[in-house]
Image (tube, rainbow, N blue to C red; front, side, top):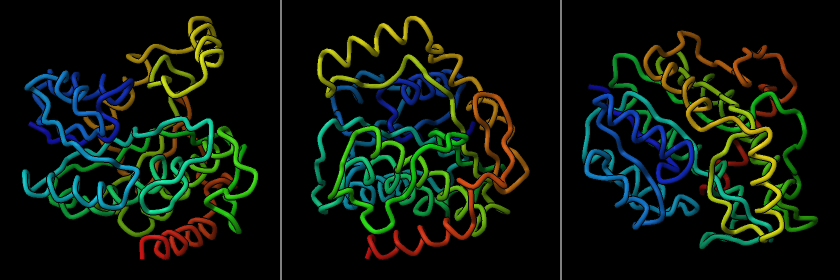
Length: 264
């Protein structure tokens, strides 16, 4: 029986993975901020209630999982939320940056001791690797100037690319890291979006989006048979070269330093 931890485990792909892994016999911990959705997962999934947009929420989730199990075999990172307007967390951080990127950094590093205790560990970061649009606003990572929902999503996506590079350089020989882009999927909670945008997304999803099951299938493969390489990048089934400019080691080191300052 594998032990699988899933952030964003109450909606969309995260929820689908949680239920499927539990059905396969895994012990599954699903982290989410909505208690009602967590309870609807049923008794086969262990719900960890935490607000991953905050530093305290991530610490609480890590502590709860560490108290419950001595080993984690797989960490799957899905937590993300669209924010049409700029909002800040209790820590004063831009919400998309905090939830989509920083929580994944904190969970990856915070659960490394448990992952290192596994015979075949893996981290799967489900984001947008292979996309080259967007960049880190090094002089204003909290986007206090010129905020836009798409800009915030792209910045956090590029930050996750660099997270994978930095993590693999430090821990990848023991805990392989996978950056996986599933492509446009009929998944996620769009309730915070304006009604016209929600309608447009629903129409687009019917025409072009992949099913949740199709997008999640490769994640099962990564968990069942973790790659041997420290870092693997896959964009919609296509392996990517690690020489992409969005996977630059110097930028990864720079972001790691910036993140350490934020955490402090």
